[in-house]
Length: 384
Image (cartoon, rainbow, N blue to C red; front, side, top):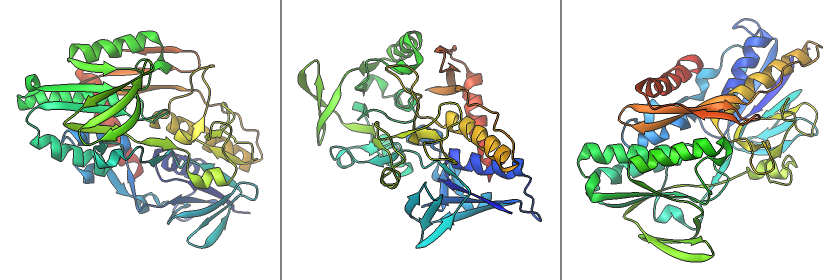
């Protein structure tokens, strides 16, 4: 009997899941051994790691997104429209007024974005293509002053992005010849950059920011916004910081449809088995930014596309084993690397085993910059 797998989300994790399932099941153009339905509200899929390049004019919209219909090969079908209901008990998804029944479900909807303190009215959300592009339009007209990069709330996905954005803006202003007339400040409620990666990585990132004369203000909790001014709470005091141009991370939350389905836990994110990625519902898995996977008592696994891809491969492998009546035998290992762009055609990587805290940051080089470009190009070449 033909099986049906429901994949919720057409981003990095969802696409990788569908592709891996299709290949491992053995679907072909003329033979469909299992149906793989991919649900997304948008017709296009965005490659979010390239948004920081868009902020400084290194990418255009057409270069970092593609049509989801292009992934329809073998047994993969794309369903476009709002997801109206998810029932993990009965393995059903409702979209466009139609209910779809599956034998397995993989939730990869990512973190939803919400406006916070009306930030959209005074700055640019660089976690969207529109926000990153809008920031660049203003940056082109910028002739000096204060630029603020603001981490609005915790947790947030793509944890290298604010630091990458600040350094790319620094490079842009130097190329434009107005860096000496400008001030760049990164505000964050974190105690230090990327604390999940350990003290050595935090110190290295701080040194990078300092070498570029980028101000870093930690433990700054955003409490109010206004035109040209931001209010923070820090060390029990309220401080007001002015700016001329500002980009921010949005508030990241678990999608309402997933909360209503009863998939979220005490953290409002989806709790999963850290090895198999299975939720509390049998045959229902969750991967990527939507999950909550503790690393230790204080930190959780970062919300990043690199882990979503590895999780997708693990889940696909185990589902296919289960379909064939075999015991699932693959475990997710959180070993991966981020590429931290620094401008001037250079970058470094941050990575290792995140369960063991064996995480390092390597030296800055042009090679790592090209590695990131290759990741972007190969993503589209392999999937669309």
